[in-house]
Length: 103
Ligand SMILES: [Zn+2]
Image (cartoon, rainbow, N blue to C red; front, side, top):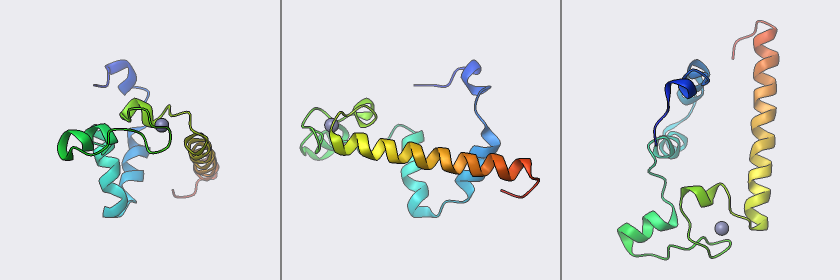
């Protein structure tokens, strides 16, 4: 998986850098693992530790794609709440940047 030049141009790298710089180590590590495609999905843990490769919420194979598409009620609720939080944070960021305040 790589980022094409067309996609690269659509990414707000300065906002991304500001966000990364605000994370403590405990929150930064999972973000860096995700960026480097190293998230500890059940499939990956199975590869290294021979643990159960199934999603704990729906019992299908849990890989990166599944993490973002699991149809369990809990996963859908978690994604919905995460998207609401992202929208709220971005809304505050846009309002702050338009009013000339610091991020
Ligand atoms: Zn699942």
